[in-house]
View 1 (tube, rainbow, N blue to C red):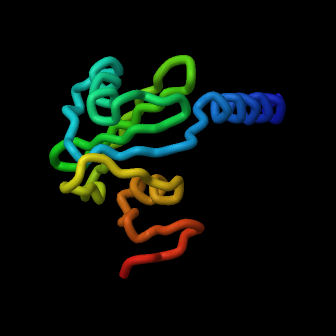
View 2 (tube, rainbow, N blue to C red):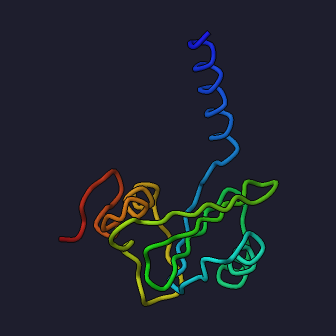
View 3 (cartoon, rainbow, N blue to C red):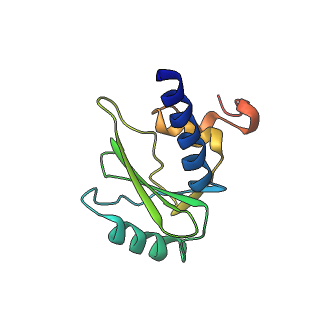
Length: 127
């Protein structure tokens, strides 16, 4: 019984991952009020990036850069996720308006690591 439940959960994970496919990641340098809900975050995406494209993810942080929100358009609707660091800050650029990130850079950023140092295939480009 437990094995069957585990297999069903694994199948569910695969289906969810297929729905929330991310082909491009965009970062906004200007802070976002973390009280913002889905509609406010979507309005900010349209204001900053011009449009919310299917299978694109849009990242925002608060002023102190210890919280972040990620909005993903899955082609049908939008998903809004939040992350908070218990200590420290996300490495967040202060200058510029928007940046494009790779998946490996996104993984480093979410962990609070210096994502600017991560290049394609995990190669460090800046020391």
